[in-house]
Structure formats: structure tokens, C-alpha cells
Image (cartoon, rainbow, N blue to C red; front, top):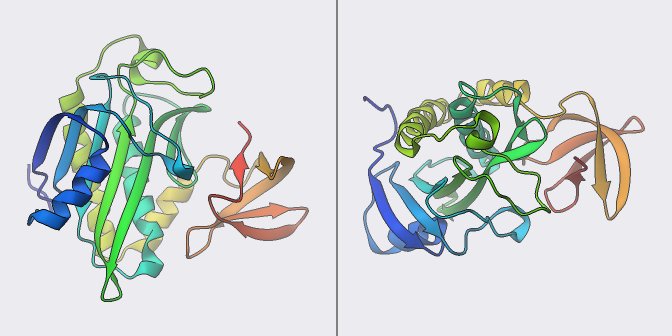
Length: 246
């Protein structure tokens, strides 16, 4: 396989607290290639959005972090989110129907979460010098915390899936979308993101400080905030300010 941007050297770990933490320490102590991937069978303290833990059963799912050196301006940081989200989305869609990206970067099948992404950037000399993209995809797990609306490949299709094959497909898709980012095709990335964005331009239920309301997603601003129309008034919200009511 020829890659345009990435050199996906894979580091396999039996167990780790967090692949993102491992990647961060690796950056401090070693010279790593663009596209280096840390993948584990067992993660004891995985990190999710909003400071939550990413819970996963041992040896049943894809748990990884990929190290990139994007060298882009911080104002364009959200396009790392669009690239990663589209790569995961493209990996899943050949197998499952009704796959959508829930802003900013959760992947849903119907209304159930099948994958999540956490991106941690390091800024140096005014540029994003390195980026750690943590990705979790539910593959063969069938039992989930009752408080979480989640699903997996096996839950949806009633069969086991090979992790390695899906990981290879994910690497190809990441390379494709990271290349679009590095070639500054930001409008293409955003257009494709909108094409697959959950509840884009349709009425949806949201919650702010326990107050539920109906609004319509109009897009995201340059910093990645969600633009929602509520009673014909446009407001941009960050991740900590608003959540979907699924």
C-alpha cells in the first residue's frame, strides 16, 4: 500500500492506561514517524469527550491513537476533526447503514454511538506541531453500560469482525483525508463533513443547562463551534455548552 502522507508504523500493546497518554510520552522521548499508530487490546483509563472515560471491553474493539505532524495554524484545528471523523465514517459505511457524524466527532449508527474520537494538539511556534488523534470503534462488544446508547459491528450484523482488516482500512482512509487537509482542501473537507453530519439542517432537540429546546444546525464556525438556529436566532456553541437530546 502506498501512502501519500502517513507512514503507519503500528505499535501493538497488550495493555495501557490510555493510548493518547502513551503517544504523548512517545513524542517526548522518541523520534516518531508521521502516522505512527499505538493500538492496544486493553485500555484501563481511556479518555473521551467532556472529560468522560471511554469504556471498552478487552480485546473486542479497536482502540488506538495516531500521531500526526500537521503543521497547520491553530485556527484550522477543527479540520483535523473533520478529517478524522470522515476517515472513521468511511471505514464503517461499507458495512453498516445510516452512519452519521454527530458533532463534533462521534460516529452514530441510527442514534447509537459506534465510535468516538478525541484529539489533543500541541502548538509550537504558532503552528500545530503535533496532533494525537485517539479513536475507539466498537467492533465485537455486545454489552454496554445501560446509561450509554451504544452499538457495535457485531450488535448490528450478528457476526464477529477482524480487527486487523478494519484497522488497515482505517489507515487508508486517514491517509486520504489527512492528505486533503495538508493540500489545504478545507472546503472539500467541510462539505463532506456536512453531507454526513447528524441532524444537519433539520429540527433536532438540544439541551443547555437542563433547558431543552428545538433548533436547527446551520453548520460550524471557523473555530469548530456548532451554529444552531433557535427561534430564528443564530448562536455558536462549544462542546461544553450544548448537547443533543437523543
